Length: 135
Image (cartoon, rainbow, N blue to C red; front, side, top):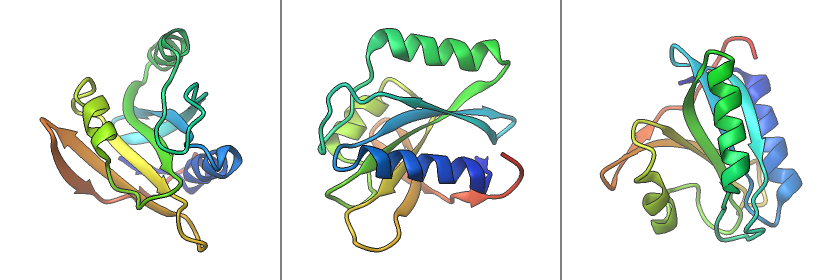
């Protein structure tokens, strides 16, 4: 997926705002390009995992579909570890094949580290974060 700097900045701002807990949300795409970010509330309110309320998840997915887009990515933050899928992420990803997983790492005192992955059948594949275009 290609994502505009403005959309990526919104995701990072969300991660910083929810720190020390993980943030979470969805990325709507059109032909492999991110077109919108849909923030969600982490009802787990935890620095170790995220959870989206089923009603809110349905609302966000409906918003994406009604706008004529598709769910291209799910994002969240890691506040105490590197931005690499955890076992919890792998378990959750099993229900979302073909979706990109963007993780914002806030564990270091430096700039956030942003990485993206495909997770299919428990296999993790790095995906380049391609920043460009309008957002």
